[in-house]
Length: 285
Image (spheres, rainbow, N blue to C red):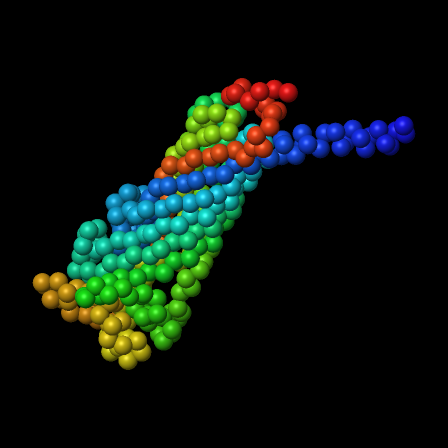
């Protein structure tokens, strides 16, 4: 038998094991928890505080993690959630009387680094970062509880006031965060995670700059836009629509959103005998 043929047979003999080891590097992740945001209707734009569970809403996600090493992984995930806030509850500017809700679809891709080796330790802190594409679409309910999407109303003059363009509903964000994972077995990990998203928009809540002239807004987008751009007149105080140029938000402070919750990670396996890479229970060949 020639030397080349021996090399070929040896390579073929190790192909099943090589494929099995590769499969063991892939984890399926499930996430469930809360979504929230930081912006004009929650904390106020100049607050240094960016995290709260006040007015948080449910979020859930599904992802995949591929181990490049015991410490470093590639990670991707799709997370669905809702964010929202109400001036009545946050007391930042109750006379404004605005509120919003928005669904968030978050597609994340990045890297994750375990500070300790999950194959050698029970408790493993980690950090992650990458890039996110997300979609949002703020809405509210009018005085008769009808759901109204806010972006088409141009409540701050987007599209007809110079320098104010309509905001895009699909945008990029910079994601980062971290958490703790507990290695229950070589194949099962559970954990707690907080993931922040720094966006480049100030319109997650449809509030950013100043009030546009009431008559100009009515002429371009109708009475409904006027009614939902300022809702102080719905209160017992009977406040009137503010003068054009009155502060409604502060555009230089962009909005954030974030997810907080519990994750479970399951390693994909063929069900055959496995090669151990640690001391948490895998049998050795």
